Amino acid sequence: MTSLTSTNAIEEETYDDYVAEQFYPAYIGEVVKSLRGEYEIIGKLGYGRHSTVWLCRERGENTFYTLKITISHPPNTTNREADIYNHIQSLSSQHEGRGYVRELQESFGIEGPDGKHWCLVHQPLGVSLQEWQRGLPEGRLTGVVLRGVVRSLLQALDFLHEEAGVIHTDIQASNILLTLTTPSPIRTFIAAEQEHPSPHKTVDQYRTIYRSRRLSVSLDLPPGVATLTDFGNAVQNAHKPHAGLIQPLMCRAPEVVLRMPWDGRADVWNLGVLMWQLRFNQHLFDGVTEGEQLRNMIASLGPPPREFVLQGRLGVRELYFDDDGVWKGETVKPNPIGGSLEGEEAEGFLDLLKEMVRWVPEERKSARELLGHAWLAPGTNGTDKEARKQ
Image 1 (cartoon, rainbow, N blue to C red):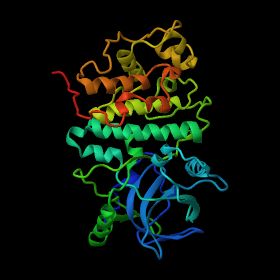
Image 2: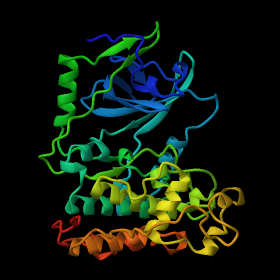
Image 3: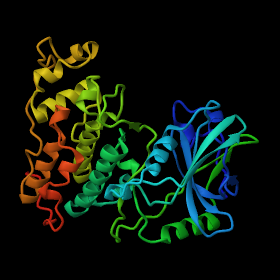
Image 4: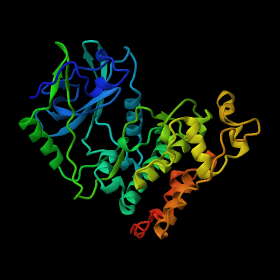
């Protein structure tokens, strides 16, 4: 096992808000116990600002799971993500979209040296859509693959919005995992960990930080089924208005930017802009501030309706629009969505996208309505006729 220099920050330590004591000091070989089972940690799969994720084997069984261990939390508090998953699990729905939402095997708490941590146990999934995309030529999903991904995610959203009453709020490629089409990635992970143990650094008597080891991915095999995961920012009551900042900036719906109430239709916008990013490996709106995002939206969609703008929170709205709802910034040069695309396939793709990416949330089609779009129909010609004009 390779030891790393303790002075160099790695993995979760690299976050600017990292507090070591908040993270549970898991180690490879540790057995984490719940009332239902015992999970032996085999290796580290990943990390985030609020958790680490590990591949585990259930003791006494040849069954593998992923174990997500959250940062510590105050006593007598619940975990939002576990609550959302348990709510979904409690439903008796037979909706097809349920199969495209990750299932929770169990959740439980463990005590660490500096507090209590929640553990979420799932069946293993493969790499994220983001990781798979990075290995593709030019980072672009073909029309055939993208069609399947979008269809799966719309099914998931229809189930979440209409039956579970849940808004995901954070639909990005890193939160969409592909199912394993073969057990070989897990076997390869275990063999690699045995032959070449993960590099690590020892911080103190309690804490060892490991480098993550990703599951292998083969671009020669068809990708697994897209599965929506990571419900840490999800909320319930999909058809009621909510307040607060959600979504990564590049995916943020205009009603959120202007601090209006939002509901499940923000997820539809989010999926629309992700669809473009997956197809062309670039953001549909690529501003680095909310003001730049609004300017790019105006260039692509035209100016927003006055009635819509005037619903924005006054202190935010007036930064960008005058009292009549007119853009106050520099002159915006029109750049319509898809203006440089051509071909029959492009026409269907753009028509679907424009049903999702609209200023007014009420004018966006629901996930259920979008599933009936011709571009998503089974047997649709999937040849990629989109082409950038030179």
